[in-house]
Figure (cartoon, rainbow, N blue to C red):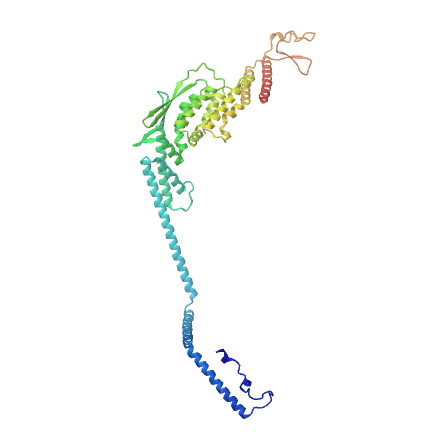
Length: 484
């Protein structure tokens, strides 16, 4: 089709004539010839166009059909737009949209609240089931499982971390948990009373490995200890056992003046050890002088090792709990019954106290090895601190002694003057020498004369002199100790 739309050059149609001069007019024959040629060319173009249209009939039919569809759709869109504009003019759409959004928000909030309520109900049901399961396990002898459940439920119910505005049901659940916790504590207390006992007649402390309580038989002591540890009530449950051990074993062991001896015995059953006992016997070494405290500390260590092996099963965490309960009282007993009594009364014997300091330090090292006392807390080294400050304790004792003697002298009020030195009998000879060498005649430090003092004053001066001499000896001994 492109050649049909090219520009028609009239000069080409009149190529047989001389058209070199543009101003030359055309003659009538030329015009008729030109018209004839244009008509011929027009017919040729029509023929070409017709042939092209016939050959592309399907394409043009499809094009016209698409145009018709486009027009139809345009009319449809126009009608819809007219309807929308008509609807908007009758009722504002923004009000409808706001109302719809509000309804959607309300429904969404209601659905969220129902979902949260459903989740809360699931949690409540789960906690109730676990509380009931723990109580059932406790009655069936599954102590460790019950103890672990108690601890988990404590965290789930945020015991001790209550908040205002919580659902009332949480208060009820916490009450149920508290009742269960009391049951657990009561049961473990009964078991520990069965496990550790003291027999007054035979003077033995027994530790039973297999326990029975409340129709539950065959409960192992190790299982009880594991359950108490899992529930976090080990300190509470061991408190009575700790009191019993201190009263009937540690206190006799710490009696320096009336020592006792201990003998350990183990009873074997068909399934292993059934019971371990610690016999408290009168000591056979009454005449042996324990100068350095070695024998004293061996007795105390023997009791603690018995607890470490047979009650705590050599578990560092358990013996540490037992140590926290008992060590403050044990250390007070050792200080009051032993260390305070062996503080030297004479400054010259302070050097010999070094042996006791060494044994005390080794005693605490042994306790640290068993984890009975802390390796990092300096407060647990009370005995070493006390022993190493022996000079302070010695000085305190001497102070009390001196004050007591001074008070007694003052209370006697003995201000009498010997009869040999009355006003009628001159104190000094003419040559300035005393007639008698009595202690009540003293030289004045800043004067060339002498004076006469009472008996009480003389005794007070003698006491001051002895104190100064003891202080000088103490300084010499302290310097020698530092030199070592």
